[in-house]
Length: 364
Length: 185
Image 1 (cartoon, each protein chain N blue to C red):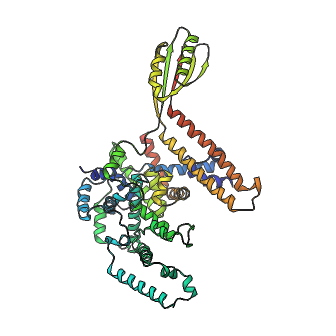
Image 2: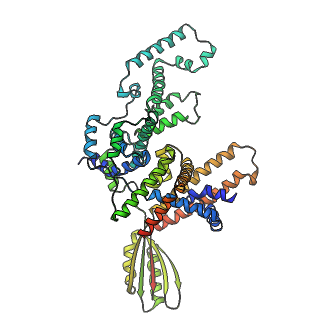
Image 3: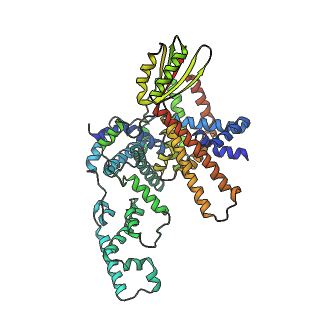
């Protein structure tokens, strides 16, 4: 039973994506269960094989070949709007235009002669027939667009369809169908998104400036000072840190006083200069730790926990017969909440570390 | 050098890697990579930077590869041209400073790993390529795969397990890996 649960968690364990309680559970188990330990080792070795695969190299003539094809392919295309946007090349196909005209005529004729019965009126076609000619054109083109999307893999304008169907009862709050989801995914992969556009130059500039993901660096400095009077030096440091709006912790023994000083990152250089005036510097060491990966991992973990919490909350709302505190959903919700708080604390700690300079002073 | 050329040069190796590891056939990689960059070029004015550029690029490459694999399954016959092309075009990788014997063993190992990878279902393979080879986060993989991060987690877990089973079936792979590690370290 335990082994099965541990094996289910192993992949996330490798990624460091487990909650603290689950992490402890897995680590304890693999320490006492040789079979699971072996399973984990094999999984790790397999993953290592994939991670060890080298990057492929494009042939030197790749750009030359590509640029020829780009010239033939023509200029970049902006997203087209309106009915024509649903058809390749931005043109209505003659056949489709004729079909649309025929449907239009039949729709109006049916309405005019009252051929549609009650059932017919309740149906989708009635919805179309009652619409104004403009709406009719839009809806039929969207449906044509969807059919085309199905056949060719092109994306229908989902946003537009939503706008048209909103205000009607038709599936106003239902989740997107598989087809719509795939269409949205394709729309994304076709570059059709809804905020500011990009150009190759802006993308390169952004990458050069590291605008997408600036590195998160924690600065640490160690200073060893030879002083005549440790108490006096301590008092000077204390007033200096207070003046700079920082914090100081101290640990003293017979020969050395170890002080951990945290000051706002912008004050670091000034504070270091002032500290160096208090005694004779016998050792100095600076360390910059890149914590970007840790930071992003924690941030992502927190988002996942919050999503999990949302799901659990919606489960609680949707099931009226709750079992109170023994309800497994409530228990899970509680544990997720605890984990969220822990993760938020870790994130806060890293953010504090990033905004402050940590100076370790050893007074001898 | 145009800005788009610069963009292509920055990402061409990554795109080649993703496509080769996903499709598993070097003969198709060049065409598919060109197809990817052409679509990128044409769709760039519509890219709104709601995701990273690399994520968007990979999702285009993945869609193009999926279409190609679907087409190939519909017409599994191999033409004479393809046979000639595949024997002519061997994958090209950055060569390390190792001696020839080590390099041959490395190649042997890499081919065997690719073989194991190629036996997996498309979506498992894609998840593994994005995570283990390209180092994408769960969220970025979700964007490329067009699913939730929850689905990514479970798919990745199943994919790793399936891959591990393929690898353990080839015991000699592990032995080769250990031998190479001994030599390296």
